[in-house]
Image 1 (cartoon, helix red, strand yellow):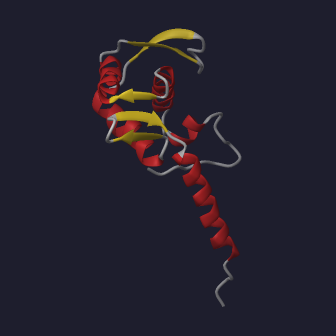
Image 2: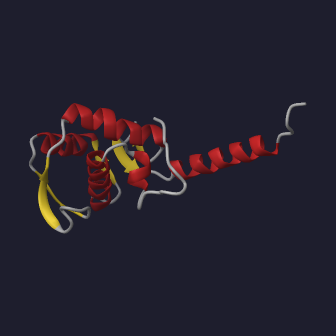
Length: 132
């Protein structure tokens, strides 16, 4: 996944940086809230239940973005697209990790470590002498 952002027009939160569409931002934010509500980790079965509820349009949540700010809404998002566009990219970026032994998804700090690594890569490139 590629993260593109404009330093002069930074989004309000991380979801605006990570996701391409407002709908993906909302679903990503709701997923993280769901994991937090379950003590920071959810089983494969719980994740599947979340995806099914989302697919069937039965997931009720409060959205903090206009024009739905503060209102309870039913979210609907295709199950396959949820895995392809939300969960898998969040795992590959290090926002969420999957423990193969416990079979649980949990929120991870790996994203922060990777962004620091990217910053250090840029510093190394920046300090290289120019070609002559």
